[in-house]
Amino acid sequence: MAYHKILDDLLKWMFQSVGDELLAVVIVDREGLVLASLIKEGLDEELLGGIAALVEPVLKRISSEFQCGNFGTGSFDTADHRLIFCEAGPEAILVVVADAMSSIDELFPYAYLCAEKVTRILDGRPVSPVIPSFRVHTQDSTRNEDIVRILIKEGAYVLKTILGGDGSVGKTTLVNNFVDASFDKDYKATIGVSIMKKAVIFDQWGVEVRLTLFDLAGQQQFTRVRQTYFQGAKAGLLVFDVTRPETFENIEKWYNEATRIEPDIMLMLVGNKIDMENERKITKEQGKALGQKLGLPYIETSALNRDVVEEAFRTLAFLFLEKMKITEKLA
Image (spheres, rainbow, N blue to C red):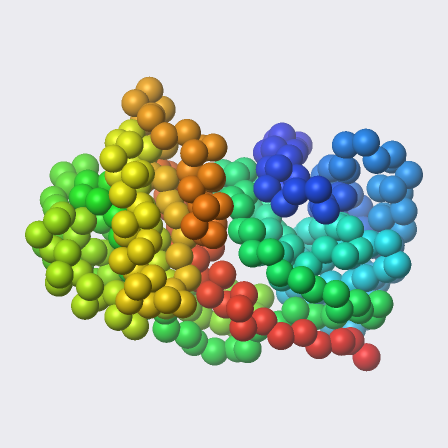
């Protein structure tokens, strides 16, 4: 089918971003039929067969426990493997298979985002196969040989979110495209701050994250007034223009400004305007390296691609929720 190529590309990105502990990624339908899969290079096909043997009984148990067929996200450990299951729409389930000592906290963001993308691919919507790096380097030695559901408390959350970065890097256009789903080519420099709101819905958990977006002016004359808006911010995007190296070089200044006022703020690094490929000066590798240096997830966007823009904000909201996850064992 037409979706096979992009599913294959998506799974390749998973391996590239997660690293050595990832052993296999399998996309199955509700009956356990494999739609797409990728196994770590150097491992034999026997492992995939063993994984398939594990997946089928777990899916049957999930189906019996949740008659409606909706279970959201869960994990299951064996002596040699750690598995995470994520619903990928009404028809499919993503199964991530990793080394037994892998951290659930590290794997969960990758599994969730990959499942979100699988859902859109199977729905026929345009999707970027790129999976950003979420490295958090946590230790998780807890073992669960029973199926464990990963839950987030239902309800509505308010997330004050700042957008920082030099002038004309595309912050305002990104926000407008996310909130209004429209692209305005007549850019006007932000005067101090622009405030907009939009809710992000996570149906699988019954959760709504209400983003209050503070689009901060990047010009030097607004430095003092800008500091007021950092106060109380829980999350933020630090944006640079991949065609203008100086905006990339100034990211550390923005990082220091934000963390000085809000030390616990959750930030993502964003390389914008990737559609301007012929004018690009900052490579993806440079962006990832800076993200690793600052301890931030790195993602690339283009205001011309609504799917990628929405993905950046949705990922930020998810990372906020991920810190509040809880688990429960099935009886």
